[in-house]
Image (tube, rainbow, N blue to C red; front, side, top):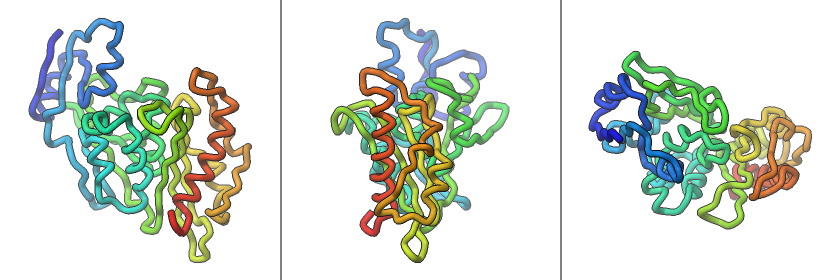
Length: 277
């Protein structure tokens, strides 16, 4: 096995230009995936590239470097709209995993149950992909093509996540259902971002569900139905959950997941839209 540990992004891109390689960031997804399999022929470990770390304000919102760790996100000083993302950061494995795992690794792994995806969908995040040919941005739904499949080309590195400035009064929330509180893969999870009007009613809602379809997704019909509702007592029409496609697996049945999602949506909306959210 060839192993490379570049110190700059340009060095990493140069290596990728001539090799088919496994990119290693925090390693918390790569190492478990190798159980019972041959080692990859080439590994490019980008964990030492300092320019890919950190959270910074931009003219249009926020930029999160690809190697920013979940523990950094959990402790970051960000507006209430990012409460869901911070909450999800605290649900990614245990403290050791949060201290090593990166936001880009979570996205590139493309698990249907990736905790970071639903809150990033409600924040309308875009991914930044860089190669020697240049740079491009993709909305997160376009980047996630299916289970364990993304739009990243072999010569590209996911270098950052860009989040446009959310409404100033918006608040985020994240609810996860698992067999226990921590160190568990989700049975279902919901992220919400809610803005209230002057009367305290829902003016805008963004709802994303994970672990209940091949990729996490926003529920546009549910979002539209919530406008004007009391966030403390939201009504969830089961028909608005129709885009989901939960499956039966050892963690839960499809029908259980469908019922659980409705309750998780209510909890997330109450948290993100309530007076004490």
